[in-house]
Length: 228
Length: 228
DNA sequence: ATAAGGTTTAACTGAACAGTTAACACGGGG
DNA sequence: CCCCGTGTTAACTGTTCAGTTAAACCTTAT
Image (cartoon, rainbow over all chains, first blue to last red):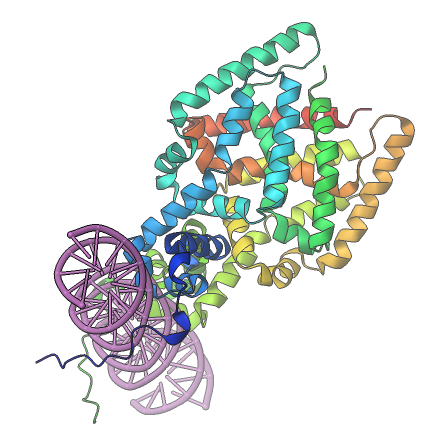
């Protein structure tokens, strides 16, 4: 069987004329499009064609810049994760007061997530379906091996908690429980937002008011829970 | 083009001989298999072939009992959701004391989720990727229109909170914030488990010990947060 | 100019997938 | 005894999808 000579249509469509000096960074456009699509549909549910369309390019370009769907999704995951985890490590690992850490973490998380509403649902979903990737991806996102950084962080917290317990200004609590309680209260409302919207009848504006209220109340709530 | 007569192999494989009176409920086997596969991979990532294999049946049987993949996944979602939501509504809507509700909800949620570790990740993932289905699915899971049940529940909680505020035994808090804080602390650790496993270096046994400790500490923590 | 090399395109390929078809099995009621 | 409805199977179909190919384009350096 002889392959027939390919019939070709004109390659550069007339609408695609680019301004020469204004070369848009195609790779960045693709990454942004991929992020939008992967956030909405998850890695398994996303379609390369949809990403190409959203970026306004041909599907082959996706493979030119990122060999496979897997690599593209990994790039997106890393980008998204690196907005969330370093803040946690830096804030809790700093040498500021415990109360300061609580205030700061709540403030930056609620602010950050308010502008990236889909991030928590996406991250939980990806980590749930691809637990085998977690280790390497977290390493990249934090910028160091979490198995070295985190124990140090927990030690620091434990010391600070013990000081306050000795002062009589705080009840004892394991540093792990401390961290989990704090980030649960910050992140979960965003992860469960689709549910809350229906269950509590919240539209987008109502949800934002709800979060604004949390910004004011959460620090007090959390510190209150730890009073002796 | 005339279709050639089909060549057929023997239809009933010898190993598949069923005990006649002991007709296993095939539909239930399929549902259980579907649940396992959908929980692991999510609706988009799951493969009908894998479900068939896990149920030990032919792929065509899946379509015989549940017309499409979508219906099968809806059946699974409803089954899983109906283990989580009714308990919430019943517990918080009951006419027991506020402290009793807190204790009860924490106890049953941590117990229940400990035996269904993948449920929170699965539910959050599905709700995130298919928000349009939430309404109908929640209605089925709760057994009533959530937009009628939930406001009543919130009213009840608000009344109980107001009583305690008047007594001076509780700080004021909006009933929505009350509910979200409570279920955040219960559910989030399970949803984020893949992350915690790596970040805190917890294996399965360590995670279970972690949850056991929460069972004891959470009620105190939560009530403490609301002391005046 | 022009050749080189990075960029972008239409068309193609092979595999995987959800869903269909028609044959076969078998117990129960006529 | 036979056929009818439900259950079950192997094989098939049409589509969608990730990934490939080779031609065409564009910019810059020579």
